[in-house]
Image 1: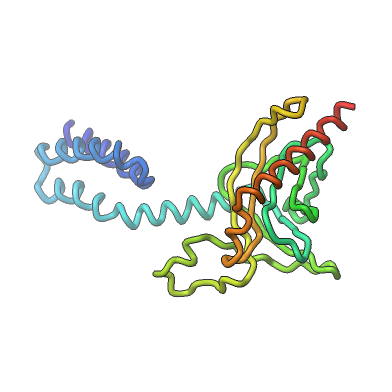
Image 2: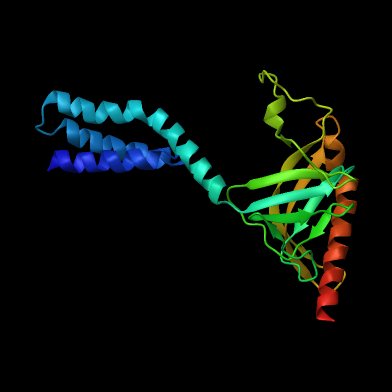
Length: 232
């Protein structure tokens, strides 16, 4: 009985620990299971195998878990193509569920989001949280899409052997959130996702307080005007 109970605890905690954020909870319970196995009447070799193998298998199991969850999550995530004007640089924002915004358009299973020159896209659809399956493009004057490379700060760390060219424009994911406009009336709430289109060299220019404040004010104004038009 002790052995079977211990094995059950070990299996369950091993599965739970594949998400490393749960280790603080699973490790103490795993130790309880291991002790039950070790104090059982099973042969020593059996007891050692059941307690040592899960420990040795944890790291490769965790890597496999992340790979599979990332692959499946990306494949099933909301699929979006974001298209920017050819010479666009700066902060961009998608404001979700705006009645007067850009209609939902799907091409080959992917939502098409076409950004205006000011980078503020009011969208009738909703940007979902979770895994991301986004593509980013510049739209050239002759209608050809040019892919924008994705950028993350870690790509430029000193220990990175293949740093991207810091002068080439890329897309930097921001985050998602919601905001409340108190003034001018009427009060308005809206949800958004923001990004930055910039090179590593000039990225910080678009995090300047005055730039961001002006961008926020323009966004708030467009959202409120949209809501007024809808109510009228």
